[in-house]
Image (cartoon, rainbow, N blue to C red):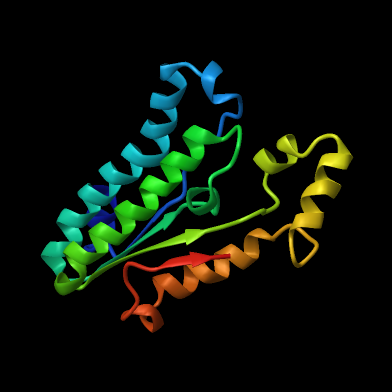
Length: 170
């Protein structure tokens, strides 16, 4: 955040879009895996939001957009740590939005479902796994990153100035 402030004189938008999702049976996962997932998926966005928040609160405006997951709403078998971390990120979004709204800083989250990513491609091998997944999706296809990008652009724009504490499922 400080580099953006130094370069541009202000900081208007932060998108927290990091995440890891090691799959496996929960009873077999080590505490180290849990801690790593929480560090990347919860603590890193918290630290970035805190650093950005200092700047945004001082300037009286800013937008933080957290990329969560539908797994944080529904929970997924074999993704217990990931689901828990993304659920925590959703509650973090809502609580932070409530704290910062009167200061002109909006905090929202996007909870994507099944999107075409490298991580998804690896998880959906062999092809019958993909076919099974697509049967569960009402649109019958995986989402495209442009579809999430369009929502990020909306939330980063002035058109969303009244929206805060929202979770947009896509």
